[in-house]
Amino acid sequence: MIFIELNWLAIVAATVAAFVAGAIWFGPKTFFPVWWKLIGKEAGVDPGANLNMAIVFASTFVGALVQAFTLAVIIHFVAAGDSAFGALAGGVTGLLVGIGLAAASSLGHRLFAGAGFRVWLLEVGSDVVNLTIMGVILGAWR
Image (cartoon, rainbow, N blue to C red; front, side, top):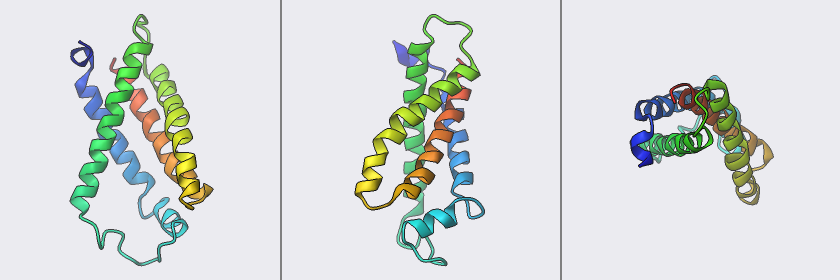
């Protein structure tokens, strides 16, 4: 069964790494202020004022875990017969999944929602970076 063959430590490490990278990407000194303005929110307004942040962060972490698991399954099948498959190939796989699935599937959603192309670029940029980081970790620990 494939679930036994996966490196679960690598999946957890990839999840944590992507979670941290996402926190940096949308940090107060990086892209958060620009993203916040582009989605039409006022500067100085607490982004978590009406949200249960424990649920938001837990859900984000679970989403990253699902992404890492899914990417691990894809890498497992892509590298089935290749013992030399490593960090570079895993990173390329993550990059392709990020662009081919995350970016392509979300473009229409963000544009039809009226969020605009720049919001999509910021959000999908984080997804592509995170999936690439995940791929590097999962490919290296395969």
